[in-house]
Structures are given as structure tokens and as C-alpha cells.
Amino acid sequence: MSFLKAKPLPHEIVDYPITQFTEDLQPNKPEKIQEANDEYFVLNMARGFSLFKIYTFFVGGFVMLIILLLQLIGKNGGGITWVDYLLFTSPFIIIGLFHLAVYYYNPHKELVLDRMNGTISYPRLFFSRKQETVPFWLVTVYKNLQTGGDFAPTGYSLILRDRKQDFTWTLAYNNPDRFWSFMVWYMDKNRPLPLGEVFDPYRQADFDRRLKEGFPKPLYPSFVPTDEHTPEQQAMRRRMAGW
Image (cartoon, rainbow, N blue to C red; front, side, top):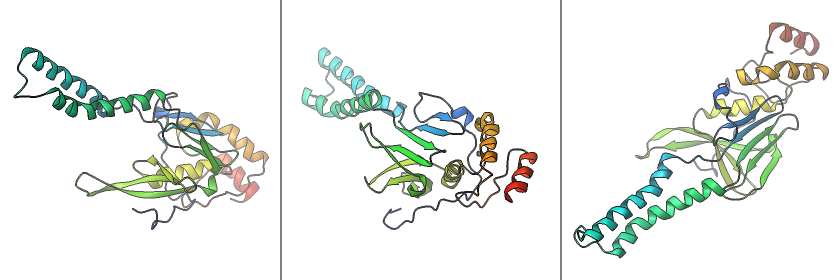
């Protein structure tokens, strides 16, 4: 899907958000949640060292060893030369070294939702250590159509696009509406915290803050109920604020 034609998603809660974050709360782990409370939601966006990346590095070394042994015993597989060996193994070694460099030297890439200040911070690409921080209401996200190896559609992902620097980050590889709804709900500090056990320890403090503020109206519209955690809290909010 072309970003030139697509329209960014509106800042609306359109579906019940993704709530199963407890098992993903693993600080210092790539592609895992670093922090989740009533003030910040932090996601490590750095890629892990996957099996594919391990393969691209070690397959070159394995092929190098096999060809070296063939050369030493004089059975070089029908005239394989050192030039052939270098041409064949170099791409694997180069790709593998690149993955190693990214894994060990790439700085932390974090998506930070600042609920109280209403801002979102996201990383730049590659080895840059700078974070872009913008008001959440200004951020632009899109649903991007994904395709498989045969170019058949496989679903939609959620893409964040930085309009100033003109680069993109993939926020979610599936359920884009639910993940975006979570982000909007979480960033609406006038609503209760989203559903999910990970936020349970902070619900009372968040409710007390909004009670003290007089339960101001929500910042963003919602098409699903965003009731308080308990019926008693919901009744108090409705009595004091009318919503």
C-alpha cells in the first residue's frame, strides 16, 4: 500500500485493544516490553539475533571449512578454485558480520508512550542514537498490506511514518486496529488504563488522579466502552462527570 495514496488512521479507539502484555514484559530483551505502568509504556524495537541471521553467518564458515578440506586432500569437487570459494562464501560472511555488528553495536531502539505528557518517542534508523519526540496527536500511522512469497495478501501491519525524516517503523505485524486502539486508549490520560493484568497494580493510583482532576472528558473518541475497573468507580465517575 502506497503511503502517497493511503490516509493515516484517525486517533480513535475502534476495537477492543490487545491486552496480553504480561508475558511480554521482559526488560532488556529485543522486541519486548520494557516498562508498562500508568505513566510510561516502553517497547524495545530492536531486532533480536534470529536463527536466519545465525544461519547467514555460520553457513559461510561451514562452506569455507568444507572447501578448505577438499583443497587440502586434493579432491576439490571438480576444479573449485580459491576464487570460486571466495565468491561463494563472501556474501554469507558479509551479511553475517553485518548482523553481528547491528546486534552488538546498534543502540537501544525504543518506542516510548508518555501518557502524562501526551508525547510519543520513537527511534531513528540504523546506528543513530537520537529519538524523535512529537505530540501523540501529531503522529501518523497506517495500515500496510503485507504479501507472501507468491505476492498473495497475508494481512495488514501497523506502520508509523515520520513525515519529517521520511522513514517508517513497523509497530505491529498483525491486528493493526487492536494495537492502534491500545495506543490511543493508553495515551488518553482522561480514560482509565486499558484492559490487561499488566496495568492492574496502577489502576487505583490512576483513578485517584483522575478523581482529583474531576474526571475530565476523554481526549480521543471511542467506539467501544472504556468503563472503570469496578462498578463503584464507574458509578462515581458517572455521578461526578456525567460520562
